[in-house]
Length: 165
Image (tube, rainbow, N blue to C red):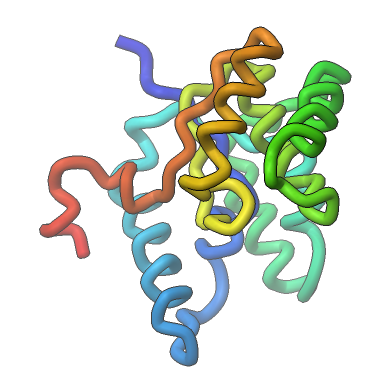
């Protein structure tokens, strides 16, 4: 049986590195959940990211960027085909994803165009947003693509969530 494919959006890679955020309990929880998923469950999935994730992970503090890029060496990097740019444009026109969040729409489009089953993210403003996702899924399907199931690493921990936290 094939492993489910997972596209790792940049927030996943970002939460794997650096000190736990003690000033924001929600961010600290996301960091801890992401690290536990990476340590305990990632081997159950075929992992992907894109050159967009690579570029975003390269930004900021050079030491942290180097750490983020280390994690990306363990996943397959997907190219960004013209079909993904076309789908991104439709997502920006027909959904509530704002133009300033262009890369968020592009992450969804890349995963859809490549047939990735799951998009893992902590971006609950523009990607894992239950108010936006129904329209996102419709737009992808109307474009001829099956959209990825969008979720957080918490949802990928599986049946033993209670024991892993």
